[in-house]
Image 1: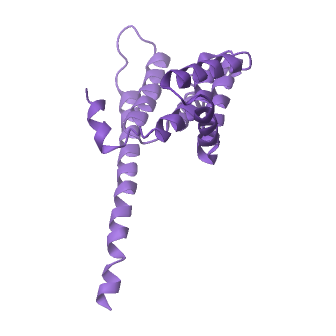
Image 2: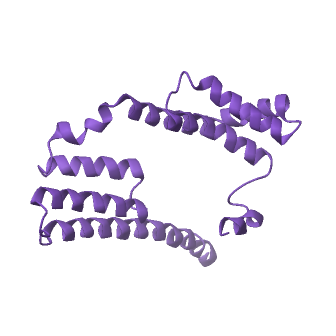
Length: 189
């Protein structure tokens, strides 16, 4: 009876560590933000510029320590800048009015969906069956695919977001995986 009660305790301890790390990294992010916010303003800067620096330095820090994902950190930083009165809402969210920014965001959302549903894997199998006689044929097929979708996605970054799941599936289908023990040493070189 005691062996069955002690077995569930081990997963509970291992589940607590990631939560504790997340809490600590988020607390460190907010501590950095408050520390910079209330620090004396350097000579030559306005208070508004220093507060904006504090907000965005802490947002960058939160992404580095994995306290928040990039999109969450960016939105929290923009909201904090507006809610504290550091900048006007129209100025804070002006970048989102640009059509190419939205195109890039949508392209990466589509790419994430293509990876999760397995469509990228199916497309990569079609590409391999049609052009897989050589690696040069595969490279040309990726180039032609990029050229074919260029009119629909004028941004290079957006096109890379669409092509990424296909190329990733091609690489994984060929046995190349960044988390593989054999190829992990090449990343350090």
